[in-house]
Image (tube, rainbow, N blue to C red):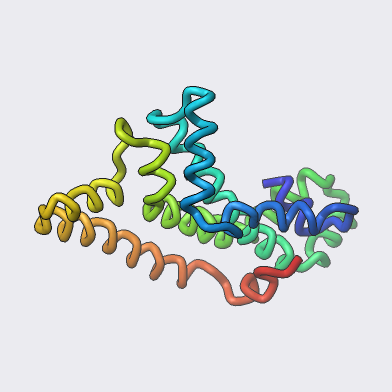
Length: 185
């Protein structure tokens, strides 16, 4: 959290490169990226394990978390933090009592985006987790390929309902002023 805050507030050499590096997992087609990752995961004993699947989801979700939270922290008015410093608050206290409470809606929105990404991640889970780790998207795919269409339909609804509800919640939580800074380097 503090590192994302630094990316949002501080100007330093390499800042743009760091932010753009977080986009790399999304910049290339997923299938070749996950196929290469699977090969490396086999070398390190992570293929077919929950740890490997979590790592795939973590790398993919990190893109959404970093960019969303960077936009949120950039939207917080610096004058509020300066006022806390003028009243004698330390940098840590200012972050904990001013910046972090103002960023909570964005933090919730970021967590929801990462959760929805992870809920929908299929390719990486199939390639890295097979045959021992099965998530709902993988289960839905295997059910539809095996012509178990009723199971695939129920699984699709189970995946769709929480996603739709969380997106509605996200719309209520995410403030419009955060979106102004989204995607700016």
